[in-house]
Amino acid sequence: MATTLRHPTDRTCERCGREEQWDADGETWCVVDDNAGSIYCIHEWDINGSFVPFEEYH
Ligand SMILES: [Zn+2]
Image (cartoon, rainbow, N blue to C red; front, side):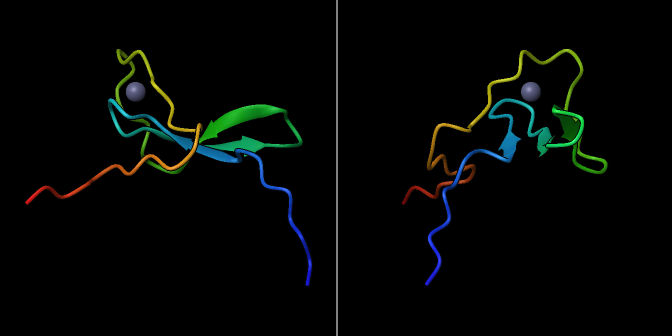
């Protein structure tokens, strides 16, 4: 049983939905495919834990 120490390797903007992944080689964030979100957005990243993008309220 391996224990994996998890750290943020991807993040999603809570405002525009932009997705990025951490590029360990370039030591920078890279946009995931064609989900760049809005360039005018002040991105608010959800890398602090268990943010649920679409929570249903009944
Ligand atoms: Zn954003």
